[in-house]
Image (cartoon, rainbow, N blue to C red; front, side, top):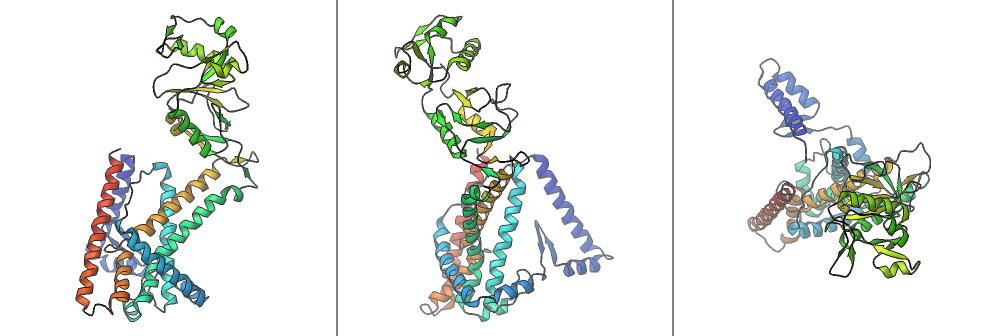
Length: 442
């Protein structure tokens, strides 16, 4: 949940900017000089919106748009076909709710900025390719757009979505190849490295987990990467609690304050399930003797006839998990496996040298994931035929290119487009509302 203090700072800061803009525009002494300053710097301020336009990139756009003309023609043609199909498909798609951690806002805004810039660069290069000029980054001349054909307009309007889709694909490729890219500095496949343990985590303690520990096993489940860690915890959570082979001599040395109970399944419950002392006694025994896991006594008789399978008697969702993190003594975790999942941060990348940061691969991986998600989301949202989005202009150009020869009356064609846009807008608004409700209802 976003802290109230952050909301107050953002809303308060914006209120100050907006009120200052209103005061300066209303002032007899400062109005003209202030408006001239805004115009010279390409700035405009409106409710919850600050817009900046600049022409410093125009020369670069004209240079890019005139290079490899034939290759760019095929590139934007492919994007036009892809986006036209994608736009129609996404009309009925949903927009999920997003729960954004406050400590990851930097990733979020950086990914939004890069995705937005790449989106506009796509429009700009396509516009130059189709001989359409623009005032600033990226403000196209409407009269030039009206002079070109609907197919040329489609190439321009689809370019932003197409470039966002390609950026998301490149992000996926970078995520897959990250172990290879970082191979000279980090190695993988031997376990997971602890990067953070929350203060309220049950894994904290003298014999708990610490930053820099390398976990290799959860129970008898080998852990070589983050995916293994998650799968092992899921398996442990949904399968019955496993036991440990304890020798008969060790059992005779243990003294329990309560008598044993015979259970309906034939097993013997030697301790009171609500006695913390009994659990501590078991922990001591496990730490010294328990080396082999089991589910029945038969699993123990394979190695020694004088061993018994001792299974912890815990609550329904609670598990006793033996965590191997050599060279330290194994940690015995008692609690819900999900608590271990959410309160311990891990990475698959282990530094080859001591001076390397253990957080760098996590930072890169997290940012790339945000870039994939937000660039993909920008492509999906803009593909929806909705008022004020790229989907509106894509739909209009698509209808002009396909229905002009079939429907001679422009009013009928415009009416068809209006109802499609209205339906897409309603669906998008409903999906966004549903996503926000899902987030707030958790």
